[in-house]
Image 1: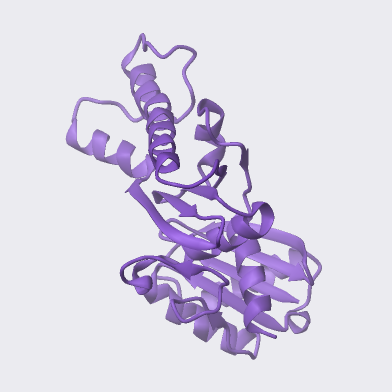
Image 2: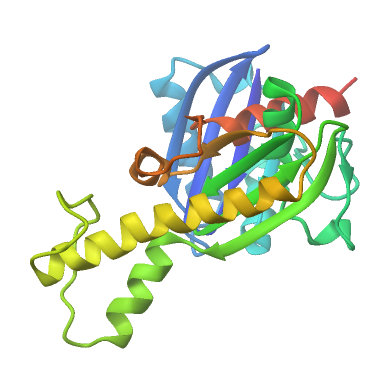
Length: 255
């Protein structure tokens, strides 16, 4: 079995695969203060929940944008799974031509998202990942990773607003019934959710103009379910897109 791990700044997503089939997946908070043993025990519990034994896991692949946690997870995998993980970086075989000026600058999560989207839909394709940052990635018909856009994530934007404006109350993020807010809370909700959806649509439209053909647009990330229903351009949400990309990249590099 394959254990796929996506280490982000806010969340870590784990997935366990048997061949091409995902058995189960989990999302937990990133914590750079946890030790390899703490994550190892957490992993053991997750596997028990999925009725999978530690000895059933043969291989591990990791995409990480948090370098301190990368080393923690390498130690965890080596101790608890008795193997060395594949770490996705600019030297990993992906099947994509990276058109960034410096390919090493592209986050591993963005690359595996692009791999999975291209494998599922071909190109051109645009991937919108709603995470700590919201990222837009463009892939051409010829499997070229053209680049993309990075903007502050939804929660970062909300936290910055509340920190800098002392009188604004904390709010629960949910779409208000009307765009015109009739309270401070609903006004903030409208600005964050409908404003963010409008930004997403505008950026997608501008990216499309710089691509050949009509791209398919897919979303992923923990906050996608909140924003995508308010957008016009995104066709579907795939919550395990990054894990699927990790599985595909593992197969490319394990032949």
